[in-house]
Image (cartoon, rainbow, N blue to C red; front, side):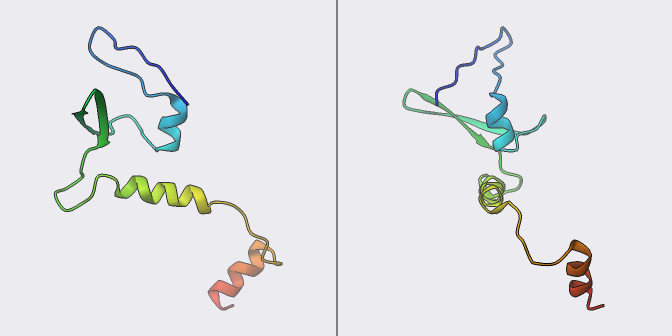
Length: 86
């Protein structure tokens, strides 16, 4: 899917809402900006020198794939009692 955005007079661009939501991009999220051939690449900025910038994104993508509901054949209260050993 192609998306277009316009550069403002201040050099700002808007990331489309569906991408921000899917990638969990909130106000204040920091990015590294680089060039790759004729492309401009945005990558989440590293939180510290030992952490991969894609670590949180990869985990969020994993959660999106496994998110859902499951029928355990018992109520929430019964399941919580089982977990608590009551």
